[in-house]
Image 1 (cartoon, rainbow, N blue to C red):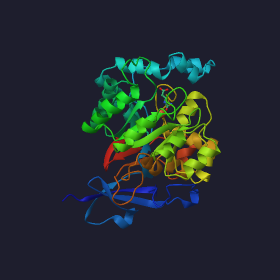
Image 2: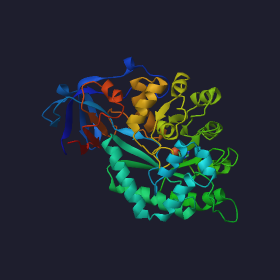
Image 3: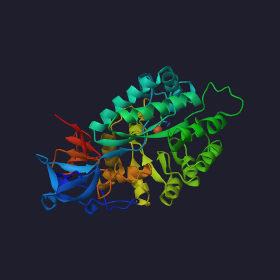
Image 4: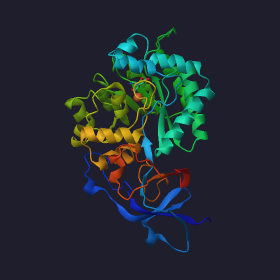
Length: 411
Ligand code: NIG
Ligand code: FE
């Protein structure tokens, strides 16, 4: 049997464990192990503790030079990084005063990316996903959720989902696939029944038979699907055992109610959520996922993160990286900026991109560092964790580790 590997010492090891899934968090509650070490065996955490205490003849020591803060690898629980083309023109139009919804009504927006994504081959899409994933990995992200939703026909959605699946085999980041066939109504739909009927009957079974995803998403919005229209789609998804996640309350409310009704794992966006939706979410098991990248990309309000936490909700923070509303795609920068506007503690920000984000993907094997968890972690070149959000994404990781292996080292 191979020896366990001891990695460290770390000036501060933040295991992000023993913290509640829901509600506000003070920095005084944040567990910190000074001069910490991680004992790893077969890609998993065997033990955590003070580095010196973990040294023995049984272990192989991997000494880390310099001062570092060690955190669980970040989880980006909501992205659309499978796409073709660019929407730089939309961005300029929005800044000239045309709204996101007006652009969409005029045939641009998401439909523009659908057109460009349909023109791309599966291998071109796969290459784009790998390039974007590698950039995220260098920023400390070891798990990325990736949605379809720019195909909007059975075959084109399958092309996207297969591209995500094959990209996952070719990158060290773990990609979690989600079917977003209900992103908007395809403008070219010509089938017999409704588009959603076709998705339910022809696409859902293939998702199962090819093992493409166990997650289903929909965009509930005036310009996409109403709460009533989406019922059969989510009812069937639930019956077939898919986890449900919802694009909710981005511009108008009703998505949160759908999320709670269908027992969704997460409700994402929530920029328009009012006190009613905040209470509804906080009193449910649904994780509320803020997407500050979309607020920054559109110039809109942020998700009421402070109110959600104070009401007792579980808050994850994700990048929403996509070519339209959130082209920046830098999770740590966005989470840090959300923190300044919403007055979040460092612990709330870091929880939002680690264990609370893992919970938004229904993953219990990552997001914190304790025995049995996957050994996914990131090191920052500092001896004080507060420096990480303080630099708003400009303090970059010195190294990133996936399942105990060093997958990125900065020069
Ligand atoms: O999460 N809101 C809907 N969907 C994406 C945007 C996709 C796009 O604009 O291309 C979002 O913001
Ligand atoms: Fe999104």
